[in-house]
Image (cartoon, rainbow, N blue to C red; front, top):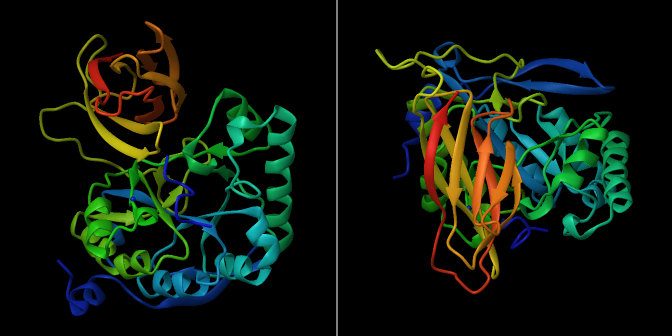
Length: 349
């Protein structure tokens, strides 16, 4: 169930990584939701973590889930598994193994359909059925939801929220679904910044092979794998706390109202007729960003902010809504496949 499902992807010496990361798993288990969970050892440099990132794996459980869990355990990683309900129903033991290995479990729909084409009642049934399958197999009720293909709209977000699910897209696409090599996956993952989330998939060998190098890169930057907060959708410490940050000297984290902020634009998944884009804001926690696409392109869906569209849906004004400093949107190409969005302004306050 990967391939095109979520298209919206220098080796490190083993001795260096094993020196940095503790590979042991704490023998003590913690009872959670009726399932005994082995707590994965955190990196030995955890005390020096300057931030956390969310490593996520979609479309499980698969026949390769045990191999993925082995690699994650051996590298001291806890990750979030966005499971497909139908897969959970067909492979309950693998879903149980995910939880036993200390992973967090999210809802990734029942059978990976295009949910924005569903009615509200169909959405409700799909997500409820998936929640029930996951809870029945693992004893854990999901708090996170990732829409298939990254496709979402206000109705789907409302349905997810009514079921206690926080929608989570991604900031970085590993491109593993698109045949990315190990080195390409590692390079894509190296763009991760504190609080951000990366899209990867269960069942892909190159993804498993990339994990040690991804961890080495994160450790070199004092970043650690963390959980995704159900409150904000951003990566935080495994206990749910937000790590302290040290802003650059002389540069306040949040400029005064009316001041400036900066943005970085990350291209996302590209389909034949549309593509996703993520915009990350720096320098302010309260902000307004104006983004424009070139007609006949038009923006159709948005997430992680308060959005308003104008000029025949070619101009997006996005305001922060407390869900983090990154937002995303989907653009229909409408025959114009060459142009990409441009940020017109970023205003703090």
